[in-house]
Every structure is written in structure tokens, then in C-alpha cells.
Image 1: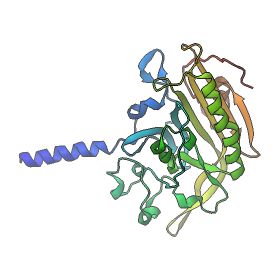
Image 2 (image 1 turned 60 degrees about the vertical axis):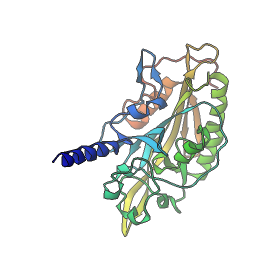
Image 3 (image 1 turned 180 degrees about the vertical axis):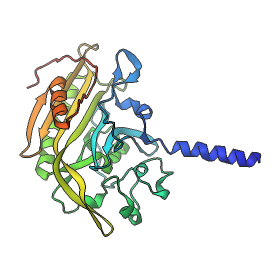
Image 4 (image 1 turned 45 degrees about the vertical axis):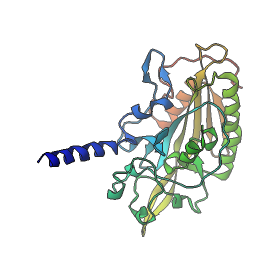
Length: 297
């Protein structure tokens, strides 16, 4: 009887460990969010939509948390990913695409505690996220939300190749986003931020769903509303000013992907635009006060 009780307790304990990626709060991966200046034990989390379709994911790879994501399981694209940046590191591209097993009701995936390359025999059962083949011959690239180039090491770079961190972009908009946002933002961060292990830049990058959908296949079934094609990509960072370490400084970007038009904004303006686009009150860094150290344009 005692052995049976011990076994039950062990299994119960093991079961609780499987809830480490799809989470109720971002407590396990809080390091990717800026701390609340009024309470260092609290973090500032961008708006999270309350509907059950939106899942919080502490993105785990090789037994470490690599970044955080809010994922829309109906549109099969992220709302946003949150991550940090301290310095540029040279990494290689690894197109080993992965999924989040805990988003699915698949028995074999229940005890998986980190992102995995999907079992090809299970593809037709994967309902709540995109898989790599969904992007074949659809006219859109796999657009990284957390880009590989911002990774702190090779393992983190590899972790960005998960479909829960990807949204459709045309080849042109993907190139323009990289050229006009991702690359220049690194330069801005390095110029104005006090960067070290304890004071990184905190970045949130997200997408706004558009009206277009791409169908996906699951076995013989065709799902017409498979993947939502975004109308916009956006990104914002905050950090401690390198010249006055008490100041929080920032920059924000909003790109309309059709014909690629880009705005550089302050946080208040980005929040206003996202509130209009999402049709719900949205704040990237709720409650924080910022100061500019240089012109935005």
C-alpha cells in the first residue's frame, strides 16, 4: 500500500512538471519581461487577451527557457513574443522547425516539456498550431517574430525556429522588416542602452491579424481558415539609458505589410494604434513612464 501511494505521488509530481511551457502566467520565464520599477518582484507584461484561444508559452528548448510568446490557437499565429537583447552574437541558421506539443490533445505529447520537431505520423492530429508543411507553396515566408539575429547564443537562435514564433510574410515584407527594423533597431539599442547581463534591452514583437487566410491540410481534411495572414508587424523595446541609468528609454515600430509602409513611434502612439487595430485596449509596457534621449526620426 505504501509503495502504491509513493507511486501515485511520484506520478502526480511528474505530471505537474509537464505544465512548464503552456502556462497560466509568465512567472517561470519572467526574465524576458522588464521589471516593475515600483516592485522588483513583479514584471510588466504586455496586454494578454483573455479568450481561451490565446495561450501563454514559456518557450523551452534544451532544458532552458529561451523567450516567451502569446499564441492564438485559432489564427495559428503569435500575438507577440517577448525576449531580451544584450549583444550581437554570430549564429548559424538551423531550419529544424519545431512545434509546442502542449498545445495539442495528443497522448504521446502530454509528457513533452519543451518544443519538439513534430512526429510526421501525428501531423493530421495537430489542430491548434501551424506545422512546417503549411507554409509550402502558399506565397508567404515563415516570418520570425523573435528574430534569430537577436539571440544570445546558438541554442536560443535554434529555439526561434518554432512555428509558435512564426507568422506569414511576403518575401518583400520579410526583407524590408529585416532591413528597416531588425537591423537598425540593434544599432539604436547599442547606442542608447546600458547593456549588460542585468540590464538588457527588453523587446516585444508582435503581429496584427489581417482579413486573408491560407488553408491548411490535416490528412484528407482541408481547413479553409488555417493560418491568418497579418496586416501589420510591430516591435518595441525599452531599456535603461546608458547616460543616465535611472531613465527608461524606448523606440517602437509599426509596419503595414501591404506595400510595406513603416512608422517609427513613441510607446503611447504605438499603444493607440494597436488598440485601434486589435479593437481592444492594448498596452505594450503598461504602467511604465518613458523618456526620449534622441529624436525618433
